[in-house]
Length: 91
Image 1 (tube, one colour):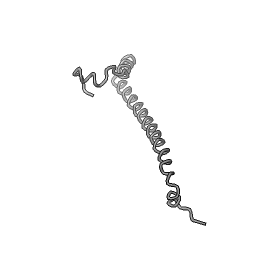
Image 2: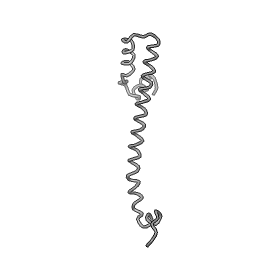
Image 3: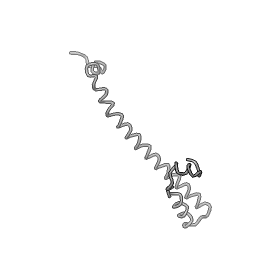
Image 4: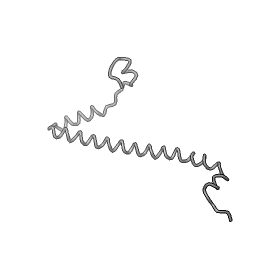
């Protein structure tokens, strides 16, 4: 009986390499995207908590804190190109 080795298997079945890569590349992208999204959301939560603590330490009222947080979370309606063409802040 012939000894089984990975090299011999891949030599006899070369089509398996593109198949494995076809599965591994998207899987790696999904895992990487999920992990970086989780890291970004947890970091954003830490920063929001630190901001709230700083505002409390400065003696801001709850209404002022809400006003600051709502102003911060409003996305800009103007895109990067429009700002450059008008001469406003750069991206």
